[in-house]
Length: 218
Image (cartoon, rainbow, N blue to C red):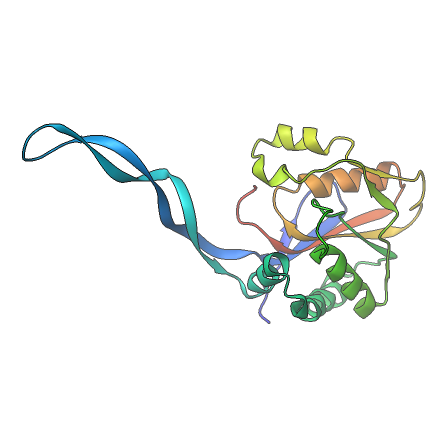
Protein backbone atom coordinates (compact mmCIF):
# COMPACT_ATOMS: atom_id res chain seq x y z
CA UNK A 1 0.00 0.00 0.00
CA UNK A 2 1.36 3.43 -0.93
CA UNK A 3 1.45 5.76 2.05
CA UNK A 4 2.35 9.41 2.56
CA UNK A 5 3.33 9.68 6.27
CA UNK A 6 2.56 12.98 7.97
CA UNK A 7 4.54 14.40 10.89
CA UNK A 8 2.46 15.31 13.92
CA UNK A 9 3.37 18.08 16.35
CA UNK A 10 2.17 18.51 19.90
CA UNK A 11 2.89 17.82 23.58
CA UNK A 12 4.70 14.58 22.76
CA UNK A 13 8.25 13.54 21.89
CA UNK A 14 7.45 12.80 18.25
CA UNK A 15 4.43 11.79 16.21
CA UNK A 16 3.24 10.45 12.86
CA UNK A 17 0.08 9.66 10.94
CA UNK A 18 0.40 7.09 8.16
CA UNK A 19 -1.34 9.39 5.66
CA UNK A 20 -4.05 11.97 5.21
CA UNK A 21 -7.60 10.67 5.61
CA UNK A 22 -8.90 12.16 2.37
CA UNK A 23 -7.57 13.41 -0.95
CA UNK A 24 -10.36 15.92 -1.52
CA UNK A 25 -13.88 16.78 -0.46
CA UNK A 26 -16.33 19.06 -2.27
CA UNK A 27 -20.04 19.89 -1.87
CA UNK A 28 -22.34 17.59 -3.79
CA UNK A 29 -25.77 18.65 -2.55
CA UNK A 30 -27.11 21.70 -0.71
CA UNK A 31 -30.17 22.16 1.45
CA UNK A 32 -33.04 24.13 -0.07
CA UNK A 33 -34.45 27.43 1.15
CA UNK A 34 -37.41 29.57 0.11
CA UNK A 35 -36.59 33.10 -1.04
CA UNK A 36 -38.46 35.95 -2.70
CA UNK A 37 -37.60 36.84 -6.28
CA UNK A 38 -39.11 39.10 -8.92
CA UNK A 39 -41.10 37.34 -11.63
CA UNK A 40 -39.57 38.30 -15.00
CA UNK A 41 -43.00 38.43 -16.68
CA UNK A 42 -45.24 40.11 -14.12
CA UNK A 43 -42.61 41.93 -12.08
CA UNK A 44 -44.27 40.68 -8.88
CA UNK A 45 -42.41 39.12 -5.96
CA UNK A 46 -42.89 35.37 -5.82
CA UNK A 47 -41.53 32.65 -3.54
CA UNK A 48 -39.03 30.29 -5.16
CA UNK A 49 -36.89 27.40 -3.96
CA UNK A 50 -33.14 27.97 -4.09
CA UNK A 51 -30.01 26.10 -3.01
CA UNK A 52 -28.62 27.27 0.34
CA UNK A 53 -24.89 27.49 -0.38
CA UNK A 54 -24.19 27.82 3.36
CA UNK A 55 -25.81 24.49 4.19
CA UNK A 56 -24.14 21.46 2.60
CA UNK A 57 -26.02 18.21 3.23
CA UNK A 58 -23.91 15.87 1.08
CA UNK A 59 -20.22 15.85 0.22
CA UNK A 60 -18.30 14.12 -2.55
CA UNK A 61 -15.19 12.76 -0.87
CA UNK A 62 -12.15 11.01 -2.31
CA UNK A 63 -10.09 9.04 0.22
CA UNK A 64 -6.47 7.99 0.41
CA UNK A 65 -6.01 4.22 0.25
CA UNK A 66 -5.55 3.86 4.01
CA UNK A 67 -8.23 6.51 4.58
CA UNK A 68 -10.77 4.44 2.68
CA UNK A 69 -9.86 1.39 4.77
CA UNK A 70 -10.32 3.45 7.95
CA UNK A 71 -13.61 4.90 6.75
CA UNK A 72 -15.05 1.42 6.21
CA UNK A 73 -13.72 0.22 9.56
CA UNK A 74 -14.75 3.25 11.61
CA UNK A 75 -18.16 4.03 10.14
CA UNK A 76 -19.27 0.73 8.61
CA UNK A 77 -17.72 -1.48 11.31
CA UNK A 78 -16.08 -3.74 8.72
CA UNK A 79 -13.80 -5.55 11.16
CA UNK A 80 -12.18 -7.58 8.39
CA UNK A 81 -10.08 -4.51 7.55
CA UNK A 82 -8.34 -4.45 10.97
CA UNK A 83 -5.48 -6.80 10.10
CA UNK A 84 -4.56 -4.96 6.89
CA UNK A 85 -4.51 -1.58 8.62
CA UNK A 86 -2.59 -2.96 11.61
CA UNK A 87 0.02 -4.59 9.36
CA UNK A 88 0.64 -1.32 7.53
CA UNK A 89 0.91 0.50 10.87
CA UNK A 90 3.29 -2.11 12.29
CA UNK A 91 5.54 -2.02 9.23
CA UNK A 92 5.91 1.74 9.51
CA UNK A 93 6.33 1.68 13.27
CA UNK A 94 9.02 -1.00 13.25
CA UNK A 95 10.93 0.07 10.14
CA UNK A 96 10.62 3.84 9.91
CA UNK A 97 10.39 5.44 13.33
CA UNK A 98 13.28 4.04 15.39
CA UNK A 99 11.11 4.42 18.49
CA UNK A 100 11.79 2.17 21.48
CA UNK A 101 8.34 1.35 22.83
CA UNK A 102 7.47 -0.33 26.12
CA UNK A 103 3.68 -0.13 25.99
CA UNK A 104 0.85 0.91 23.68
CA UNK A 105 -1.92 3.02 25.18
CA UNK A 106 -4.89 3.78 22.92
CA UNK A 107 -6.82 7.02 23.41
CA UNK A 108 -10.08 6.09 25.17
CA UNK A 109 -13.00 6.19 22.69
CA UNK A 110 -15.00 9.42 22.56
CA UNK A 111 -18.21 7.38 22.53
CA UNK A 112 -17.94 4.50 24.98
CA UNK A 113 -21.48 3.26 24.31
CA UNK A 114 -20.47 1.61 21.01
CA UNK A 115 -20.04 -2.15 21.12
CA UNK A 116 -17.35 -1.98 18.43
CA UNK A 117 -14.41 0.32 19.18
CA UNK A 118 -12.02 0.64 16.19
CA UNK A 119 -9.25 2.32 18.20
CA UNK A 120 -9.15 -0.46 20.77
CA UNK A 121 -9.30 -3.26 18.18
CA UNK A 122 -6.57 -1.68 16.06
CA UNK A 123 -4.36 -1.17 19.13
CA UNK A 124 -4.71 -4.82 20.09
CA UNK A 125 -3.90 -5.98 16.56
CA UNK A 126 -0.90 -3.62 16.39
CA UNK A 127 0.37 -4.88 19.75
CA UNK A 128 0.03 -8.48 18.64
CA UNK A 129 2.05 -7.92 15.46
CA UNK A 130 4.74 -5.84 17.17
CA UNK A 131 4.80 -8.06 20.28
CA UNK A 132 4.10 -5.08 22.53
CA UNK A 133 1.91 -4.85 25.62
CA UNK A 134 -1.36 -2.98 25.04
CA UNK A 135 -2.64 -1.35 28.21
CA UNK A 136 -6.38 -0.71 28.09
CA UNK A 137 -7.09 0.05 31.72
CA UNK A 138 -4.32 2.28 33.02
CA UNK A 139 -5.64 5.47 31.40
CA UNK A 140 -9.05 6.48 32.71
CA UNK A 141 -11.58 8.68 30.97
CA UNK A 142 -13.54 10.72 33.50
CA UNK A 143 -16.05 12.51 31.28
CA UNK A 144 -17.56 12.34 27.82
CA UNK A 145 -15.89 14.17 24.93
CA UNK A 146 -18.21 12.93 22.19
CA UNK A 147 -19.14 16.48 21.17
CA UNK A 148 -15.54 17.50 20.52
CA UNK A 149 -15.58 17.05 16.72
CA UNK A 150 -18.38 19.63 16.46
CA UNK A 151 -16.37 22.32 18.29
CA UNK A 152 -14.14 24.41 16.03
CA UNK A 153 -12.79 26.94 18.58
CA UNK A 154 -9.52 25.58 20.13
CA UNK A 155 -10.16 27.17 23.54
CA UNK A 156 -13.54 25.45 23.77
CA UNK A 157 -11.98 22.10 22.79
CA UNK A 158 -9.41 22.47 25.56
CA UNK A 159 -12.16 23.32 28.04
CA UNK A 160 -14.05 20.13 27.17
CA UNK A 161 -10.83 18.11 27.54
CA UNK A 162 -9.81 19.71 30.84
CA UNK A 163 -9.87 16.98 33.48
CA UNK A 164 -11.18 14.41 30.99
CA UNK A 165 -8.34 11.90 31.55
CA UNK A 166 -6.51 10.53 34.56
CA UNK A 167 -3.85 7.98 35.43
CA UNK A 168 -2.32 6.58 38.59
CA UNK A 169 0.63 8.61 39.88
CA UNK A 170 4.00 7.38 38.50
CA UNK A 171 2.37 4.34 36.87
CA UNK A 172 4.48 4.84 33.71
CA UNK A 173 7.72 5.90 35.39
CA UNK A 174 10.66 5.56 32.99
CA UNK A 175 8.56 3.99 30.23
CA UNK A 176 8.36 4.86 26.54
CA UNK A 177 4.69 5.03 25.57
CA UNK A 178 3.06 4.77 22.16
CA UNK A 179 -0.08 6.89 22.37
CA UNK A 180 -2.34 5.50 19.66
CA UNK A 181 -5.44 6.87 17.96
CA UNK A 182 -7.17 6.15 14.67
CA UNK A 183 -7.69 9.71 13.39
CA UNK A 184 -5.84 12.98 14.07
CA UNK A 185 -8.05 16.07 13.82
CA UNK A 186 -6.96 19.13 15.81
CA UNK A 187 -4.47 17.31 18.04
CA UNK A 188 -6.09 18.64 21.23
CA UNK A 189 -7.05 15.17 22.47
CA UNK A 190 -3.55 13.78 21.93
CA UNK A 191 -2.09 16.81 23.72
CA UNK A 192 -4.42 16.39 26.70
CA UNK A 193 -3.63 12.68 27.05
CA UNK A 194 0.11 13.18 26.51
CA UNK A 195 0.16 15.76 29.30
CA UNK A 196 -1.44 13.27 31.70
CA UNK A 197 0.90 10.44 30.71
CA UNK A 198 3.97 12.62 31.23
CA UNK A 199 3.00 14.84 34.15
CA UNK A 200 1.16 12.32 36.31
CA UNK A 201 2.13 8.97 34.84
CA UNK A 202 5.76 10.14 34.63
CA UNK A 203 6.36 8.50 31.26
CA UNK A 204 9.88 8.94 29.88
CA UNK A 205 8.73 9.54 26.29
CA UNK A 206 5.32 9.73 24.66
CA UNK A 207 5.14 9.01 20.93
CA UNK A 208 1.89 9.85 19.13
CA UNK A 209 0.80 7.55 16.33
CA UNK A 210 -2.42 7.67 14.29
CA UNK A 211 -3.60 5.90 11.16
CA UNK A 212 -4.81 9.00 9.32
CA UNK A 213 -4.89 12.78 9.64
CA UNK A 214 -7.56 15.21 8.47
CA UNK A 215 -6.58 17.97 6.07
CA UNK A 216 -8.23 20.62 8.24
CA UNK A 217 -8.15 20.94 12.02
CA UNK A 218 -11.68 20.10 13.02
